[in-house]
Image (cartoon, rainbow, N blue to C red; front, side):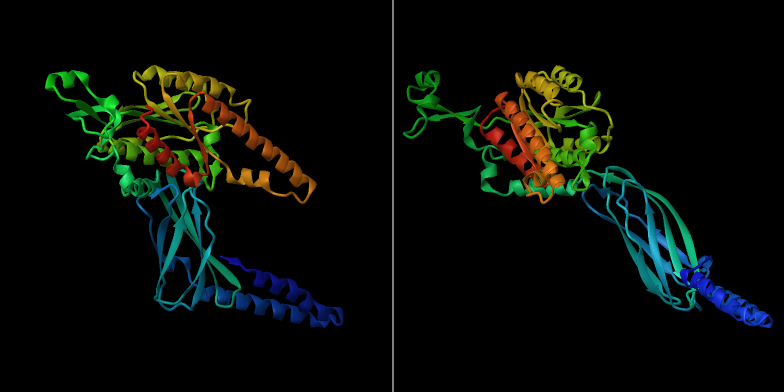
Amino acid sequence: MRPTAVTLLLFLIGFPLAVLPVMFDPDLWVFWLIYLGGALLVLGVDALLAMSPRRLHVEIETPDAMMIGGRGTMQMQLLMPRGVPPVRIEVLPELGETLAPQPAQKVEARAGETIDVDVELVPVRRGQAEVQRAWLRWTSPFGLVERQKHVPIDRHVPVEPNVNAVRSTAMAFFAPHEFASGLKVERYVGDGTEFDSLREYVPGLDSRAISWRATARHRKLICQDYRAERNHSVILALDTGHLMSEPMGGIPKLDHGVTAALVLAYMGLHTGDRVGLFAFDSKVRTYAEPQGGVHAFPRLRRLTADLAYSASETNFTLGLAELSARLRRRSLIVLLTDFVDTVTAELMLDNVHRLARRHLVLFVTLRDPELLAIAERDPDRVSGLYESVVAGDFVREREVVLARLRRMGCVCIDVAPQHVSTRMLNQYLEIKRRELI
């Protein structure tokens, strides 16, 4: 219990006014006592009429789990006691660092009612989101006294990668007819490099597909049919260094990368490829051998959910050399990382070049829309001009690094976070169509 601003104002203004008659006649000091006694009496009565925190019961229900990029709801029920005057209650949740802070909510409550309060939980990082406590505050009928109730919650809600976004994005690619070419179970015959069957040659078929050995055996022109090769090895290489822990659009870059990687893994497993995971920063954090079949997806989801945010600088020499040593066959390596400028990217370029000699590297970075907006805006002051020049330099140096990677034979993707999953899937399907692995 504590006095409100109205009470402080009442005493700050009322006391000088009550003492003012004494300046004209010392015998009028009794008015000061009358004012003090009346003010304390009103304050005491108002405090007695205020609802006691012990009589207010609160029931709380938190979600079992949440996904990064999504939202959850904590449901609170305020059970009002009987025989209390109407009151306006302010509800303020106290959340951990993994959740975005939420503003206070004000609800009107009457005696005997059950008030439902929904508190939105917005995760900003993966891990264990902590819902610590809730504070409830209300004032007395005259507004002179403020009461508050502290409700301990101490619950942890796991925040996992956004699998809903994975399924919705991946299934959108299963619908078009073009996706069936060489990727679905019915095997689109005619493209690819993997032998499928023999058939009699008819005009219009590629003469280069004629099998002269089979022709000699059957004494008529026989050609070979091919199908799109499957069972490729795809490695999702995630950089978990400090640059990937920076937020972009309210979510760390690493979580954007995890979601895009799971989308690609979901698609790759459904199309017959084998998908593995590699995570590194200053040292190797996770390695999972490529496995095929849709049953491998929960394993990848679990491993990506356990990836921790690191404050260490990424060691590309150690990480990519270790990855290269573990791979025994040519693979598609999807490297999701980030860099600042050409100077800090030198070691990364050297090691990616060594990796690209044996494997096909799909290099994926996230373009910062805010940095691009600063570089392209028209400044209206000198400080804004400086910001535009610096941002423009970063953008140009980024393009220089990407151009060097393309000359090494890498396939590069540099897009905004909301488009990275779609671009990665499109590029993956293009790589399979062109049989680049």
